[in-house]
Image 1 (tube, helix red, strand yellow):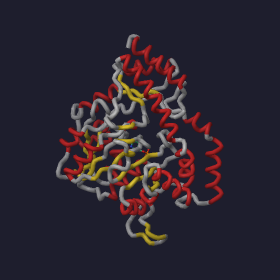
Image 2 (cartoon, rainbow, N blue to C red):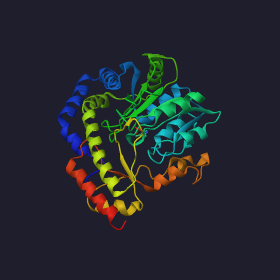
Image 3 (spheres, rainbow, N blue to C red):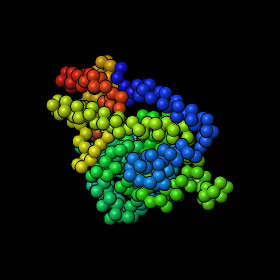
Image 4 (cartoon, helix red, strand yellow):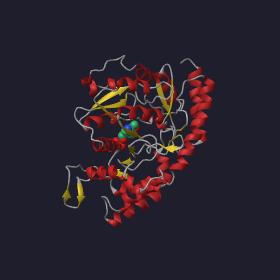
Length: 370
Ligand SMILES: *Cc1c(COP(=O)(O)O)cnc(C)c1O
């Protein structure tokens, strides 16, 4: 079976290095905060051309989004623009902050948020916008910033799928006021457990995020505000420091596979994601559209290829958000995509012969009776 993401192979290759890193934490007894998280913050910030103090390690991508929203002062009575096609965490964080997610339709070429739809959704209560660099493809941040500037909205980039992606030569995550990263194991950079990080453009914001994530603490027993326990643990930081060194290489591998997929799908006439102009995507997922998805996925599975669907239900139609009053037809592009998108295996550990096998099976399925 060719899995969507081959963590087995990736961890097999790094096995000794990862065990050494975990062992160093065990021997140090510094499991929470301390040198391992500080080191990872500095390394991750440096990979974005920022000083370490601007990066705050935390417990998950969801926590990172929440901490950014709280630091921006988003709360009860506020609205936050969120694309309907994303993982549910993007909208959950808005609800946890006490605000209301307002769902925005997507652009059919990039599957990312549509600026026109976002502009129509702005109201006097809108306080923030969360552009999600979905599947690792950067949003057009020029358009996002001009919409946000015009309405005084805080921009929080959801970079959970877009580590090291760039827009106009600039790393995503350094363009908005905040950026939220996830290191869930299956992400382009993943821990051996849950972890996340907030990148802040200003050191003052970073200081607030750090306090909120650590019991509102300014000193050991001085708590200025009521905070949370949303810290990253040191084992995850040590693992992530090891893996960060390999991320550029894994990203090159993903791009090479994506280029091969692009060429083959174009000659088959299948619709696939077309990256944003001036963007350098990192292909967290490789997404195309097919007519009869169930049969397509079943045919590939029979031939040893696992596929995925990201995401089968747009957020405005999720039961969890039924009280927001959306109905089918409200966001037609997101709904259309949800019925048709399918993700092919891609990761830093995918081999060329496996990719060619995937392509042969996609070709057979697409030119057969599907
Ligand atoms: C994974 C993901 C998150 C949430 O990250 P966790 O670390 O799992 O909490 C948020 N947004 C997007 C787009 C994601 O893919």
